[in-house]
Amino acid sequence: MIDAKTKLVALIGNPVEHSLSPIMHNAVFKKFGMNYVYLAFKVDKEKLKDVVNCFKALEINFNVTIPHKIEIMKYLDDISKEAKLIQAVNVVKIDNGKAIGYNTDGIGALKALKIDVKDKNVLILGAGGAARAIAFQLALNRANVYISNRTFEKALKLSDEIRKKTGTKSFAIPLDRKILREKIKEMDIVIQATSVGMYPNTNETLLYREDFRKDLIVMDIVYNPLETRFLKEAKKAGAKTIDGLGMLIYQGIESLKIWFEIMNEEEMENIMRKVLMEHLSFNRSSV
Ligand SMILES: NC(=O)c1ccc[n+]([C@@H]2O[C@H](COP(=O)([O-])OP(=O)(O)OC[C@H]3O[C@@H](n4cnc5c(N)ncnc54)[C@H](OP(=O)(O)O)[C@@H]3O)[C@@H](O)[C@H]2O)c1
Image (cartoon, rainbow, N blue to C red):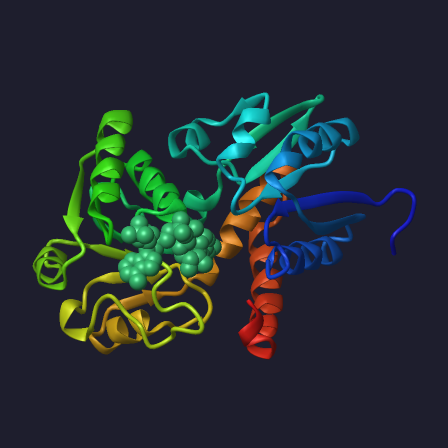
């Protein structure tokens, strides 16, 4: 029940109407008997500064989504090491009146992989916001990071940045199927971090069965549909596949851990997965 003690946790972005964050966070609050409510707010760029000041005054913790993950950094008092490297913030904690920015997208993806990535060769398809967060987190965990992107200059720039800022091995590869198929022979993990294959273009894929191997781990961060064509092709080759729901859930869990510190991760994961699966299967076209 909402009463005078209920506290708000917010999401700001534009658009925000299709976000799954309110569903998963409110389910956790209910399950854990926490007197909190999570609401999404559509915020224009011009209002960002006012919104941050308002949240600081009211001590409201919040998530940040597209298109404000970079711009928001101007208005924060401090930024975590990871967020500084990635150059994007998706979580803000108000601590003693100060707004501190974090990035949990990369750690979310790594947790979804569920393996130690040290010295593993990882190929990331994409060099957009999500790919960037994953690439830096992999580099911080000492994986060798290979980046392939449609706009090759972006892949070159990102791999260059990773090498310079983390000292980790990182290379750019053209998004060319023949070249990728050869390169994948050396990979342990392949992560699809472009929007290719996302609803409604569910038949699209950048790679096919012949490009994968049985002993590869293949993750697609797209979660609508849950089993993308990319994952179907990898599965046909016998690879171990991981869908995009894990990353979504774990970045949310990491946000909750930053705001509330100690919570039962396994229980949070179970409740988030349950509500998201229900929502995605009943409401497939709206996410
Ligand atoms: N599971 C999760 O928790 C999670 C979290 C964040 C994002 N995502 C999903 O990840 C995807 C990417 O998100 P983002 O925030 O990184 O987006 P973004 O910053 O807009 O980047 C989009 C990426 O996709 C590439 N791309 C788009 N269309 C392509 C095509 N037809 N062929 C080849 N490459 C193409 C772009 O290449 P160019 O650079 O050449 O344009 C770029 O690398 C989205 O589907 C999003 O829903 C999932």
